[in-house]
Length: 612
Ligand code: FRU
Image (cartoon, rainbow, N blue to C red; front, side, top):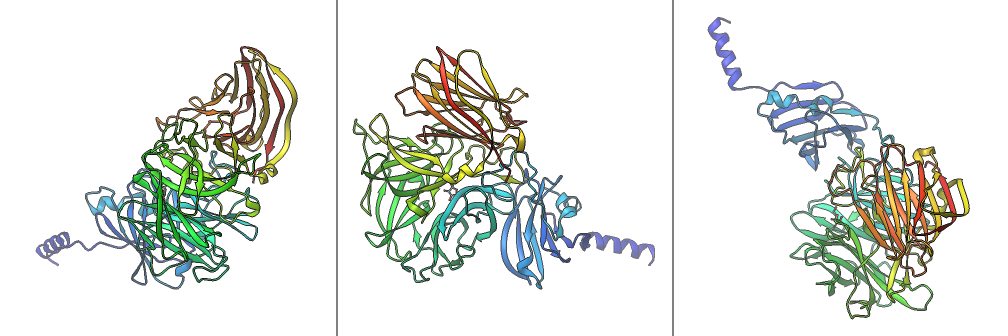
């Protein structure tokens, strides 16, 4: 080649750049098609393709091609400058097929040369294993969490053959809200949770938002008496309701071919249904989110639905959106009366900012819910939990022994995506049993007790004090230090002679949670402003306050600590408070003092808890 030809060739190559293939070593072949477009072929053998994630990045769109055909699309925050963690894409279902990913990134690169430098291409790999070892210090030991990835609402819960099924809003491809699917876990004791494969994933109608499941014991839908029926919201540009059924106890679902079964012109979501044995039909409550109302539908077969009524316009706390309804009947403690509870989760608009669970007590005739009024003729606003981290609470269908067992998402939309965890984000509350009681104001309220199974958490009785008097001087007790300080604390307070009783949980880093029983106000407050890491969101440092619903100046407290959460059940669940905390080190001391006179502390017990 002479000099001129060489020059020409170089010019032509410069004009028509043929992108060279890059063979990354770990079983992937990366082919840069343009600044924002890369084709990745899986060339090696292995169970997973591991995507490197950088949380601060925008999502890349990953179209998964199987033998050249589009199988599904997912969104992943592919790493640009550093890898925060990996998420696995399971290759097992595609064994024997050719898998490629057509990836559109948003990395803001101006040349292909720059785009090639992105950390994701060098680190993407095929692997036989994926590391889910529980190393993060804030990951709870005995609360339900996903193995990895983002979780919000618990939903679709049902009980069958001794097994508690729990589904949840899940992103299998990162620890921020995206790719909403139904993750699935089961438990036989409400303590240890086993993780199952994703049960429902996005379809052409959109992502899979919250919903509910129930057993079709009368075979109303025609899929058999042992079928589990699921209804969920398909969420794309619009929100519609879809039907699914399972013949393998909720492990996998088939989709009803004529979905959606309910369409409306405005946002409606989170269908929650139950079988009305009197009327022999299904009843469904659906959140008409922006209208701040709950719609009631009925159906003989889960497919044809008739709108019967709506409840809520202008009532209670209105908030930004109404979401995740539930409707059930319960006896009122100490009476023959039965009442209906309509649960209306709302966000924002909670008593301490952001998300919270509101409920109404009333009557339901199979079609219409009517709320009770107070002595002034108003419909009062009631909260199921007086902490900041209790949302999307709904109950299990078909629970044994007429139990109304619920679980909530232990976070708040104000900061759920910012909390200082990485490989997983969010836990659920402890499972709780809902009851109804009449309070001193003559109103009926919902109580929440820890599910009875949870006493099995107790390991050693680390401290027992039958009676002690406290005054201005702090009385201090050691908390268990094994297993990262996870424990259960119980005591009764008789404050007839006191004005204020203070309780503190603290560590030797100066971090503390301050709880205060204000005897005259009949309130318990929880101050987490100095509880540990609080600066990831301006909405996190907060004081929450619960009414104690007593008139005799006595309270009993049952407190569960699990690394990054504190749940307080007061007076056998008459008031409850759920709050997250992120202390640099576990709290090691409990201190108690009293202002304005002596307070008596009875039956103080502290149990350490086993690591599960
Ligand atoms: C409540 C919610 C639901 C919706 C889901 C989406 O937290 O907004 O209304 O179904 O989350 O993940």
